[in-house]
Length: 303
Image 1: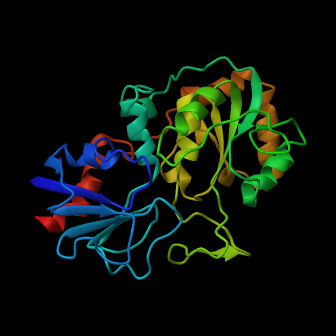
Image 2: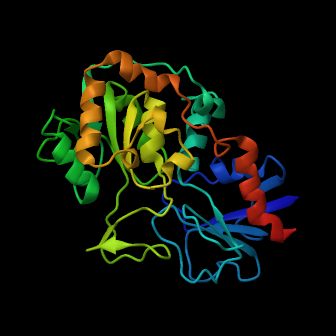
């Protein structure tokens, strides 16, 4: 199919020519960018279509989805929602594409390898964030009582990682930096405050109790760095990622038990190294055909 594609309301620095959606759509279609006469629009804006009569896909990479979903023709989000006009498209896909394009990994087979390289480790654990709010801040303080978790945040300021508004340039220095650590604290940001959320979200004083399926770059960046993620976010993470390759918060009875496991691995290199002998995923979720089919499902009503 010939697709004339327009991106609307994306972040500053977004590369319209080189991104995961163009990559996947071009596997089966002829795709050109067209900002004046498109037949397909992918937007992060709303609540109206930027081109009223053009097939429009709404994309959300935040813990938010319009409710009801009634202004676009199809919706892509992180969430598990029963709706024929919705496709779950995890936000970490954006980063996986960039990892391949930049040469950090050769292809998607990286996530299925059971013999990954283990970089030399000189430090215990890192935590890269914009704040200590929410569940991640609470766990950081708890783990920090065992051994100092190095972070860019005040009052510690152990290092500096540049942030910007693009999908990957802020990720690359993080990946290059955290590879020296055994672990990376990889909690999703569960603070929403008064911001709108996804349907059926459960909150307590403005904090999400679960991310509803959202899995961001916070999990995949440590894998690319060759460090073990300590993850909290989606309680269904083990449906997509192999819990034997990372420390899954949901596999433990409580936080004390999780910290005991971290301490055990910190003091046993042989046991630590077994996590790199496990594939990151054992499902099809990071298979190219599977990802292409997600986009084909999103545009099937265009045909």
